[in-house]
Image (cartoon, rainbow, N blue to C red; front, side, top):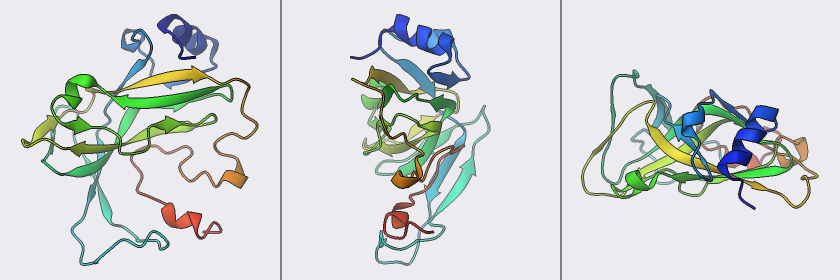
Length: 190
């Protein structure tokens, strides 16, 4: 069951679901709009033939900060990591989905490649996997509406929450866009 605007506001008011900063104007009929932060992880040009997911590839991205009043230009076929401005906390009885705004999708902007699922127990800013699949560069502005966050009720509260040590939750509490830690799936002690 997807939570309606009324239920989203109630869950936030009770402190069960946390979205900070929260702006009631961002609540849609069945989702909450999220805004783009001003930090981006841009992929460096490297002299490696491939990324081996079993190995820590090191610093293959660089963090770029865009002042609030300026724009970030996303070129065709470019892929960057961005982040939401909002900090989100999902309790054990709920699960979330993040989707792009349709107006941006109609311009060729995709905000997640695969990571649209927000587990029970998640705490942090959400990393966005932003692509321009269009043919023209697109200006993105910090603070603009970039995604919508829908929330669903679980049949029962989850027994295991994101952040539980046995899950190896690598991104809990992230403050901005974070590069892949896939290698930790093969080397959990790192």
